[in-house]
Image (cartoon, rainbow, N blue to C red; front, side, top):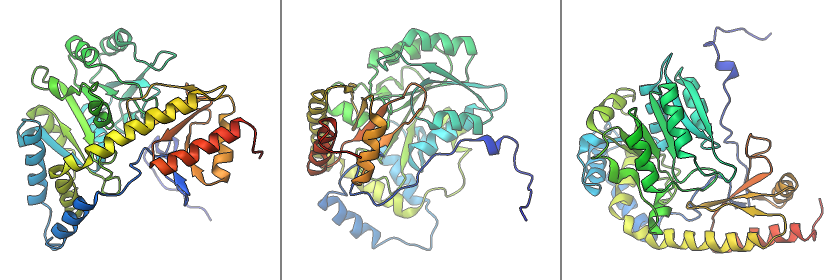
Length: 363
């Protein structure tokens, strides 16, 4: 007999985030780094983990990482908040600035969790449609923030899942035009910065105290398994957001690994440059396929529109290549997102896509 429980109102209607996986032969569906830690970094990580005091709570390690990150950006430790991936940082910011009667503005399509986080924070989400080419209409976004009297505005830059990058001058225009906090979700910014076309909003923090930057170790630094992210913000915003965090919410193992990676982040520069080169090579190859629209990307993935996207996704699944299909999601119909893997993986999935388009395979 099924039991009836008194769950929180509205929870049953809350959409979930699908993280169910399978043992893919080639896994390019989650924007992960295709490689594990660089050998020198791994050696250092193992050495440091050997000295971890497992019986102690993670106080010292969190402070060490905050201080290291702050120094890297010429900020103070009080300007840095750590979280379990930038996703937790964003969720806590929604809690900090959410609540009944509060509105949070964000573009769509963008990171699907913005809508969910807004509902969980009992705030009203105000989505602003991107242009048909998936670029942001800055004036439209500013108008939405002002008209809604938003408590928080959020922009993913480069945007996921479209890959588009908002130039720094446009980010500054938004910051200059609105008074509420502006969160720049820069999970993929390392790839844009490496191209010398980046324009991280970090450079705006001191000029505009209401600007917030969230970044992650999961993408460029390949620490998705560790779940480590950080936020850079003015001291008052950082302090209030910190109040939403659970005590000892970060574990010593992840903190130790992240601190090591941060200290040795130059070891990743070659990998980031390689990912960019592979992305551009793959974009060129996909553009040659009849019926494919490949959107410009400044991240570690490519978004493609194709009338037979559902069939292509089914075929790739059959041969154990996992890509991100958006099904009938609004504004993302007939699109697939391909994360950039290793050169060998990329060559295999590109050949598979080309073969499908030439109808050399049938389901």
